[in-house]
Structures are given as C-alpha cells and as structure tokens.
Image (cartoon, rainbow, N blue to C red; front, top):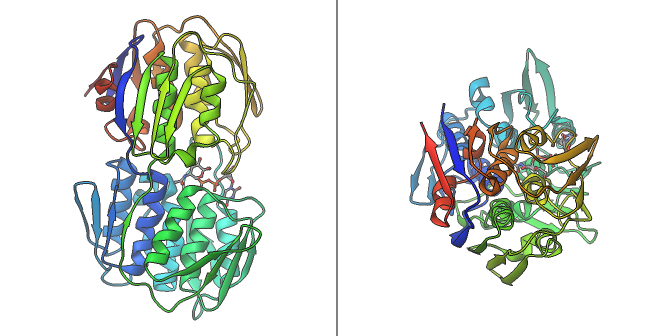
Length: 417
Ligand code: UD1
C-alpha cells in the first residue's frame, strides 16, 4: 500500500499546467466504440483512464497511449459484456452502457457496486434507455439489456440533470432512429465536450430553446480527432491548496469560464484572483476570510467535486463558513479526517458548518474518496508537522502527477511505496 507524507506550512509558489478532464475523457472513450479509429488528445494519466482503456480492450477496441494522446482502434467483433471485475475498477463504467447497446443492440454488465459517495443509483440511466427501446432485466447482479431492432428516438425529461444519464442517452441517441430530445439535460462542460466529440464524428446534436439537447439519429459515426477540455476540478483543487497555504500559484491550460462559480469563493476568502481566458493566478496572503454559503448545484452552479478541497481551505478562515451539499447524499466523509487534523466542523444532514481554526496539525489520515482525498492533502499542506495520507489510490484516480506537481511549487511531499 502506498502512502503520501506531507510536511505542511510551505507556501506554494510557482506555476502548474492543468491536465485534461477525467470526466470528459471517460465518456468520450466510451463513445469511440461507435466511431472507431479515433485519436483523443490531452488524456491525463489516471487509473480511471487506464480502467477505461482496459474496458475498451476487453470490448475488442485495441488502444494505446502516445504521450498525452490515446489512439483507439475500431472494435473487432461485437463484445457486449463487461465483467464484474472491470466494472468495479471504475465506478463510472456505467457510461459504457449506452455505447455498447448502440453498437451491439445488446449489453450485459454487472450492476455498478456501492460507492464512497453513498448510494449511486442508475435508475435515470435505465429509464431513459428503456424509452429509447431497450428492454432491461436484472439477473443475479447483472443487467441484461437488449434492443429489438434499432434504437428509436424519444422525448426524455430527466427529473434531475444527471451527468452520467445525460451522457448515456446522448451516446445511444446518436445512432437511434429519429429524434431524441433530452429535457433538463445536464449542462456540465464535460457534456458539451462529449457532444463536441460526437459532432466531430458525424452526430447531429444541438441545443433546444429551453437548454435541453436535441439529437437527430444518424446511421453511423466516423473516426475523429479530439482534444479534451481542461480539468476544472483539478484546477479548483490546486487553487484550494494555494489558498490554504498562503500561496501564489499560476495555473495554465485552464478554461477560466468553467470555473465561474468557483473563483468568486476564493475572492470572498480574500485571495486575489487574476485571470485570462486560459490562465488563473491566485495570490493568498494574510488570513482567509470565511465563506457565507457554498451550495453545490448542477453546472453552472458550484460543483460538488470542488466542495471538499474548498472546505479544507475554509478550515483555516477567520470565522465560520457554511456548506450545503445538494448533489450527493454522503459527501462529507472527509470531515472526520479533517477533524483529526484539528478542524472544527459540524455536519447536520446536507449542511456542514466550518468554524475556522488558527492552525491545523499533522495526523495520520485516510483518503476517503477521490475529492475527499484531495481535500485532506490540501489540509495537510497547510498543517503544522508531517501528515501521513493513507489510501491514496483514490487520489490517483483523478490527479495526474499529484505529488510531483505539488512538489514543483514548493510542497514538501513524497510518496512511500
Ligand atoms: C458525475 C461525475 C462526478 C460528479 C457528478 C456530479 C463523472 C465520471 N463523474 O457523476 O465527478 O460529482 O457527475 O457533478 O463524470 N442519480 C440518481 N439516479 C441516477 C443517476 C443519478 O438518483 O440514475 C443521482 C445521484 O445519486 C446523485 C445525483 O443524481 O445524487 C447526481 O448524479 P450524476 O449527475 O448522475 O453524477 P455522476 O454522473 O455519477
């Protein structure tokens, strides 16, 4: 088991290039099953991306990495089953379902396992696929999905703008017969990126007047080359680390627009934020001010994935900050770990009240989930003494060269095998 050792209280200073968005790469890789022979640039080196490559290989689509690009070949054969061990390697493997069904007319996948963010149901994915003409049966933990002839377009009104469900519908509907309308579709930048890739492959997708998505089914997709958007959550995480340590950090290769709900929080904390369309510089000196309210919301609201890293910085603010988690039921698992480092946080259901403390201290702490792990690292960077972070495989799912990046801007951080 690997762990990270972080000796805190070094002021982070320097510049970091932000890698491609994990949450874009994964659905785009799934979509390559329909177009074949694609080149995807700006793919971060992450264990979740490796897992997606393994799933593609298993489904007959050979792929290889060249630098930050992944080349995916056309799938040979109609493999339509993802075994349980591969499904469990990546919690978001459900995003392959729509692509497999559209390609093969059937799919057999194991139910995605439990999740560190609480129950993560897939009812919206399945109800939408049924509307597109898929019959679905559960069989001993597996889902057996079958299409009679061809997928057909449908009007789908999502009760909640689920990111994963929107992606599955979007991918499947590109090859359905006729028109599909997705009302209340998720609008995250990663959805727009997936749509851009599908359009480059010949899909017909546009926005409806009320912000939904309209997909006119086509017979087939063709290969394309695509560059993945920057990872806005990695950017928000490094900004939180900079804020927590009184740092001065310049992020390059970002899309500033995608962080429009996040950057005002750092300004509210008293940091100076200087932006261009593709760079963000954050300067933090003097004590941080508290945040009145941070409410997580679907995009363009404040992203749930940035809640925990920002909370780590708020632990050191001069006053009380309030967080309201509206997306996931159980997204405060990092709180007990932050408390071990001296943070004063009270959680009541969806609300967390963070009373700032003067100093955090080192501790042996567990990374509870991907973004929770990043939050714990941010706290350890600001804490007095040397902290030991366990279960860092969560961090490796979403941050490329995490400790090298932080070390390059002055952090005292090393990985022990
Ligand atoms: C994606 C992101 C994740 C992010 C989340 C919200 C990827 C790989 N992951 O996850 O990092 O935190 O969006 O921005 O892109 N829900 C249902 N039924 C469903 C589907 C979802 O009840 O069928 C609920 C979920 O339990 C959750 C909420 O809807 O409470 C949001 O989930 P969703 O938007 O689907 O998130 P993911 O696609 O899983």
